[in-house]
Length: 227
Image (cartoon, rainbow, N blue to C red; front, top):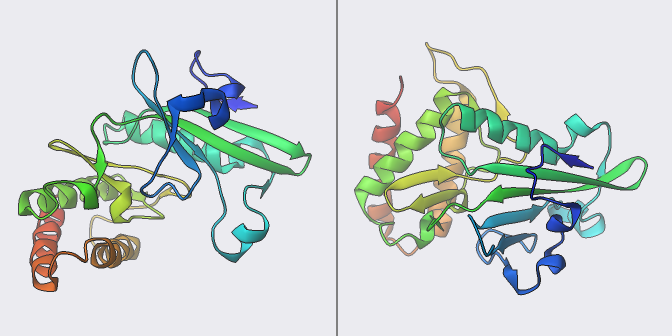
């Protein structure tokens, strides 16, 4: 079954093999389950298959318990992307989700989104050591937080840089949460701590003192967008 598909999407669109040489595995952050789809006309796409991580993923890589279409991970992410897009937040354009049931009580899933033109993950950006980029990232993250978006996997590879624009990607298991106008919710602080751990890991080529200084620029810009 499909969910909210655009007219040009068919079930075969979710099979990398059906694209032949037009499908190229994502090398950064793809974990072996994402592909760039080059199209002869229009914007390129990104195809991602949902895959379990950790020990469970070694045993049951792609199957999840089915309890209704609207509760599947692909449908929930597609719906969330539409909400964020309508809010004017910088996210990729959602196209379609695909739910496949190999047995009645289990499902496998995939999602198609438009590829952000000229975008690269933060660690690969040429401007990764420039303070203005960190400030833009801080402001962008706070804009998502002001909208109540809790990103379940806020890491450097899910922050995309496209020229002067910043995008967030990969909204699997993300949620819209309550936002207090008085006190900064704990989930916001948790998101930032998770991102900081990723910065120390993925941007380790930057000296620790430089990372600390750049992180301060990010935090100050984040706070300036408190709304």
